[in-house]
Image 1 (tube, rainbow, N blue to C red):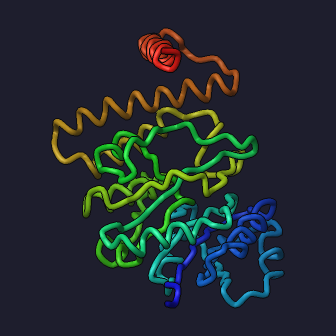
Image 2 (cartoon, rainbow, N blue to C red):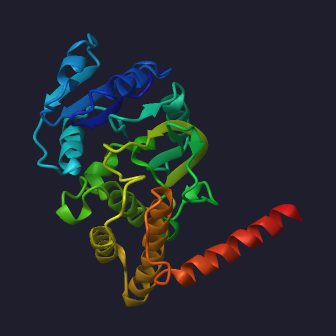
Length: 292
């Protein structure tokens, strides 16, 4: 039986220091039937020179100006895709060689699933991402509303989704979280249709130049505007909106505290005293559970 074609979408801008590792991780996949569509936002470093060195008919490079909206680059790649499945890979991340084989095997025998994601490891440092505990393998809309546990570079999705649900939103308010918005749209169309595979199949780079902002100081006002966009797009009623605002305010506060502590910068401990208190209680109780 012929393997279905996977179209891999990789937007890039000035990632000459990283993109070779990302592309090589695609070439070294044990799964062979893929096309790699690289959307180059007119990089001004040596990204183009590195990409010119690849002599592989499966790799296409398209120069495309996205005006700072990565969703536009991803949508351009999707519009060029020929595959039955689409995968996303950021140009500073790395796939393990078995990633596509494992995911396509699952999706091929599970027609009810629209997409699947995997666990990740952060690097440098090789630490497994500790951000969110996923208690079920099939992710629900409610759990994803609470916190985004689906990382862009882990996802393989059926191409039919883009015909039925549409492309990624290019709204400025969703900049850097347009993927989170899209996963929610999938689950609103068919709940529990994204499967989480609890294997570390992606190495997620933490650096000063990636767009996610891990490890960077958080602009609370700017980040809250993004959360507001998610709430506006996905809260189904007033009750859910109130619940979601409470959840997102708590999530943002924890992110702020975590990055402030990591960067050894000052923050208003009085403002977050209640949150810090309950976090200490949770840590204490978790240690008791582990001990006994």
